[in-house]
Length: 412
Image (cartoon, rainbow, N blue to C red; front, top):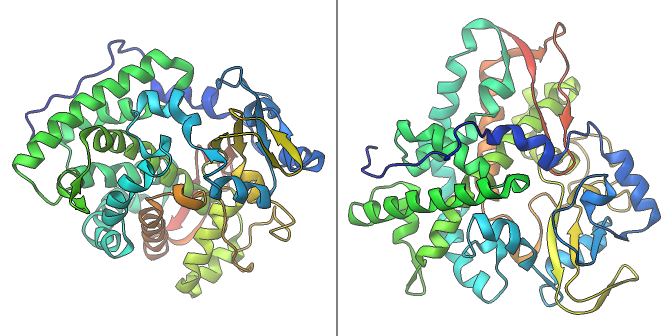
């Protein structure tokens, strides 16, 4: 779609937001032995998750704690009378905007979240599978199907959810590259001036798009959000722009990581991949197991509202509390043999989409995208297997996890 709105690049064109990944999220191949060793010391420990894992923590000087047990993690995420989302104010609040529902507590959070939920209900999201997701998948696969080999990350999963978002927003093709650089730069908290610059420039861009789409609405996501109301209220501009700023990271980046991890896990467990080939009804179980086994986001942040006790540990008011979802997802008290990837295990809810009132509003879209991606792989990449002549996939990171490459071969 053509637009009169001009998107602005970073002032420093040499700045590359894609190079910040390792500094921000770590490069550890397998953090889980260290996570298990920490949990053996207690389900709630003093210190931030980043510090306990040997990385710099940018939260400030307030007391910090890390939650490693599944029971205690659920307690923190659900009990909003004791734990607040205000810890995101200096980071996500600064770049996405203080209108981001990720930074809000109830009643403000619930008031605006219900409008987003209205758009992202499963019955609406499923229609995007046919009209948006499948054409993107088929278009990307057409580029490598004739070769009989591919890097599924570089050529498919890294591009796929972002292309879906561009179509949902109906962005002009000319804006896509700059848009992605700004969107990724927003979470480069080790380069805060650029992160703030990205938030400002995306805000200006979305403000113009909202005005255009309100005057001439279409069926794109900007038009839907700008014109949707709940209980007679439209989303305030601050809340709407904050959500649109966050969409690329919350929906695109995490879905790219989750889909990549799912495919890597199945290719490294070919018996389970073969079982899915024979019975597609196993796909939902495979998706949930991949999200549990090595979820794309390993921590969620909360702040203690008042003095409280958690797991027998005193938590003072104002303390930052890292909920280590990756630890909770591999808690042997909750998941038998937790380090094994096993799509046949008894299904229990995982922590990768959080819990409680802040559970991921885009979780249904993420599942649709992961399902359609796996269906397309099974339909088109016959006899899919890892390329024996190239390095095996390595899932890395302590905060955000993803393999850099998945080299495969398949029968043409």
